Length: 178
Length: 107
Image (cartoon, rainbow over all chains, first blue to last red; front, side, top):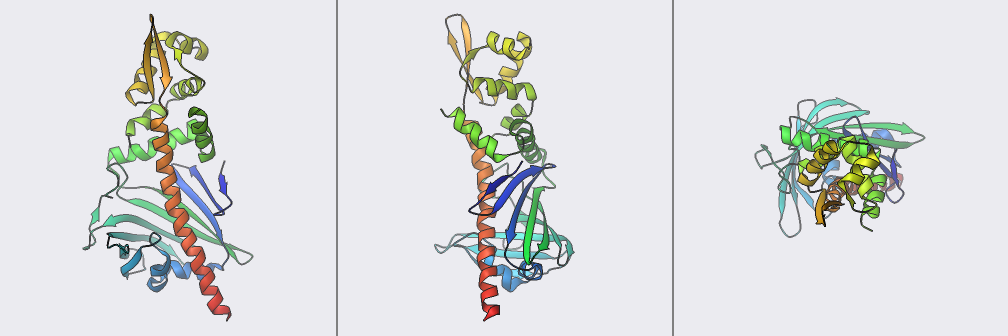
């Protein structure tokens, strides 16, 4: 059911209309949770490679937010925002992720007209033998019908057509290309 | 990204058609026969698939031959791959950062 990427040690699958990504980290859970919940840590790893989090303001509590600016070396800027819904230290964080403007208003991502504006993410942390498994579930919320159809349609076609796996889709594409 | 792709693919018979056509182009009659569907049904599904850009029709003699267009499926794959890559990169960053933190702690 899952694809396992050895290089990343990461698996990806579709479940209940959400995209589920799992990965094991070689660190205790308290530390992993800490780097998700403190701004000085988040600045060091959140954001695309090559981008610097040049502005980051965090209010880590349910109802609070994380507002940040991502900046590339050539001066390209993007603003992003989390709104925290649930926090259970050190096990679980639920937040809604979106692109934003400098004032913190939610905006549509520049790269797609149908990509949902707001993605709800649920991340859980479990520790076994000093290693922490992070499970991330993502799906759209407050989506316009077109955006919701985009996601649901994608999940439906993945589930029914390709057994929920990326492997099958990719294998299938390889076949079609012949 | 065309939303129609998803609704087109979400119907089991249409997926059967896509799978059948991945082996090569076929006239509508053959598709109906192999999937044990009647011809009007098959034509209806083929219209939806054509509308979504997933198949194209080629008239040959007095027959209409249907064949697959892989481009929309590639688009879907690209989109999913992008999502996966974004998180892959983020988690790589996190992994490296956790290593770094623990090295400092152990000194």
